[in-house]
Amino acid sequence: MSVIPSSTQTTRDSRHAELRARYPRSRALYERACRSIPGGIHLSGRALVDFETTPSYFERGLGARLYDVDGHEYVDYLMAFGAQLLGYAHSEVERAAQEQGQRGNLLSLNHPLHIEFLETLLPLFPGAEMGVFFKTGSEATTAALRIARAKTGRRGVARAGYHGWHDWCLPLEPFVPRGLDQQVLEFRASDPSSLQALFAVHPSDIAAVIIAPEMVLPHDPEVFHELARTTRQHGALFIMDEVKTGLRIAPGSVSERIDLVPDLITVSKALGNGWPIAATLGSREVMQAATGMHYSATFHGETAAMAASLATLAVVQRDGVQIKLERLGNRLIEGLNALVRARHVSAIAYAEPLPAMPFFKFTEPDAALNREMTRHFFREVLARGALLHPRHMWFLSAAHTEADVDATLRVCEAALGQALELTRGL
Ligand SMILES: Cc1ncc(COP(=O)(O)O)c(C=O)c1O
Image 1 (cartoon, protein in one colour):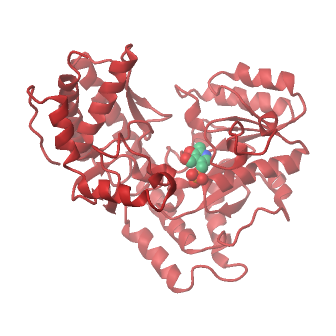
Image 2: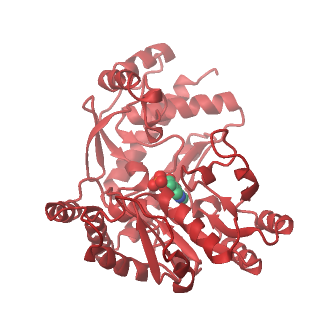
């Protein structure tokens, strides 16, 4: 990690110019992309802070390290939005995928790996007896909902969290079919009475309640159990959307950790350590409703990602990965909180929802100051070699070490000092 001398003389303008000079290739690529991609980016590639003073193009990843196109190295805590559980370019995972690819990654009809993949996956998730496989989390949640509709004969859904980009996930947007907002209802995950209120108005329309576990903050197992009880009392199915948390949380899912058996569970992200793979799992009784249902696509049966996933699952079970993630996450959270306490800064680090997925935010009562502290802090962290996202939860991986976390805490300490200096007088 590079060391940038902190100077109380540094003006905001000159610091801006210094940071801008760090990322010329990133900026040039963004400008080029604006000519061929609407808005210049795919949405997950949005600017960390801005396209001027923070990096946006990366060309290599290895373990917990990420390398940008301007030659800077980062300890990454985004890990491709949680898809990289073991670290970038993990040798066992990549070898398995490559060997499978050499046999033809996508064949006509069925492949024995389809069965082996699900047979390996099912015992890892509570209540999972049958499953279907996909490429993305959005597909897995959409299928879960479709299965719930087929099973209950109802159309509505109550949701809490981000479940993907498909029409039903964005019911209020002007570009989705009219009327979706009548069928897709939202409740406040941490407040079970808000779900009861929905059922009071729609006692027999709701096919499923779907919740992403990171929506219950602070994490409270009893809230999930109460939501599940309310859901079942009204004849609906309870779906745990563990696209982010599946495999990443000790023991293997939030459902297992809180001793909850959902009717359906969706998983993706960490499952393939960077290879596109997802699944919807559930009890035999519920999943039978998927028989013959149209949820298939040309690439669902692709097997290199399944081979990658089987290798990932083997490493996770062998190495007790989730325990390590939790320990490192706690170290980062405690270190950050100690740091802001020592500097009397209004900010908090916390688990979102559990320590393997930490986050940090400034909590200055003055909104303008809060915004500026956030902007300067994250720019300075990036300039010192740690990729911490300012708006999205972070992810530890099996490739991170205690030394990485301690180095990142030193980076945060220096960045905090500089952010305080740059926001002085605001
Ligand atoms: C809880 C949850 N569900 C579903 C999705 C959608 O997954 P994907 O982006 O793979 O379509 C996400 C993505 O972040 C997610 O976090």
